[in-house]
Image (tube, rainbow, N blue to C red; front, side):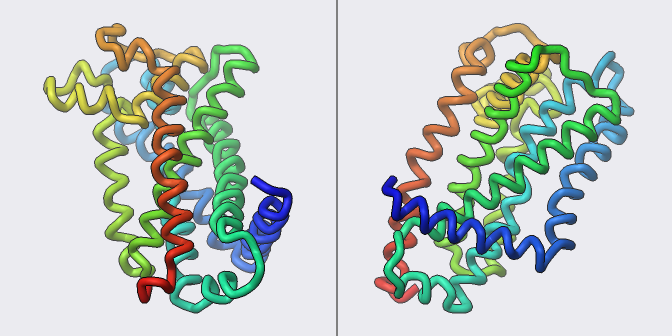
Length: 262
């Protein structure tokens, strides 16, 4: 990536950050929603689980789960720019074609980093504890942000395909199967065989299990499959594979805007 592209991307990032000052309520809602989800699942689901230390199993999974949620605000903002002609104006000036998307992704990642801090503090408040060292904790946060970055580019591409804000909610529904066919709430060993296999190979399951291991929290179940015993590897490989697919697709779709009448 050239210096010119980086400069343009940072300019677009500052544009998105300026929206935070004008829309503080939206930022607060984006940060409050993961907190509400965490508290709700810890006390509603956790209260009915007849196992010890369920909070220490659930909370890292909720960290991973929330990396897939909250993309809707970014997707809606992108489609609104499309429909208001803002993207057309950006495309008409001499700037890097990928800067708009990169700038939006960077602002989302900054917000996601703040969100992780809020989630960690909330997890500590509900009884979760990290038992690993500082380096392992930072590695866990890095895996969470890597998953978020990959999911974000998938969301950007789908937003460009959807084209209209009202279609984003329909696209967002696709997140739910990924989120709940996973090991976030329970071990895949307790599921029907086919469902457990899907859950074990879910990218979110890989990140959730790897984060549990790094934080020193219980993972439940033995390493009975290749996916379970190589969760750290998959927690890196899955997001990189998603990025390899959706980053070029998103940039190509952005460059093609207007050429096909969209």
